[in-house]
Image (cartoon, one colour):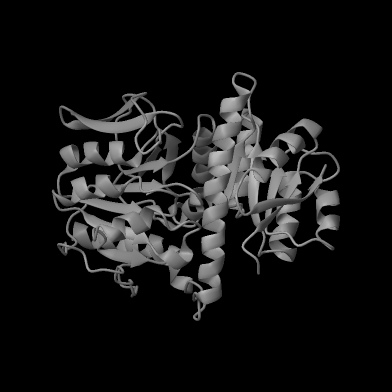
Length: 372
């Protein structure tokens, strides 16, 4: 295995194939292996090419992105797939489905307003994706024990079921004892739609606390994500709106491109949506939400940081820990990108590290036990 990542670019438009080829060529340790105008041609080229990552368009003739991804999952599961998406509602819906099927990330196509800025942003994002893909692949080569499949009990979470939680890589600075929880706060990024689809649908309809969630995404996509998760879940899942009242058994997803906070309104808790400055180069940002949660819910917070690039959420957890929250992170071996959970563990703020297949069951146990 060489350090250079070989990239196959699949798009039916000559212009975008050229743009993406130029961007990939400018990324260190990455090379364009070939281009293809549709999924059928791409799959044929894989028969005689060494490919590590595919940049895959959504809408193409003969064989579109979803059909191609479905085949790739079976025939070439070792290849990383990044979806190349337009910014329309229909493209967003399809992109979310692709991410839930296991595509590791998506990138928006450059728009016509400022093409150079879009290209620079694409190059920065792809550079990060390629770096994390290479790191993930090396970690897999060093893994000696396979991840055990979830037990049948995961489909029916039960307080009496036994879940073995992994200790964090370093013991937390202050070990928190799980108590009563009034809210579940979640931060997630790269790999999030797929991971969330393995957690939220398995939570019971009577969880009886609200869930406040930041998934790093641009506008339009979070609405599609909420709709998709709502169809699969027993809980109500929605894209949060300004001044929504926060209610139990509802998942509020921060709208793409905007920050989400919570505030007290008499006896109610309500949502505040705004366009404040990005934090950690993110809007919505996990840190912004978590800081507000600490002022509203105090110690009665269960937090969860899942797969994602960067460190957004770590300082938010630090703030929550000052009031006594119980902190979960997704385990390294089940993350697409172990950036955000790693940042929490490096600050020694994680109480437990949990494999993705066991997260829903562990959340349910903690919340129901705290209810007494």
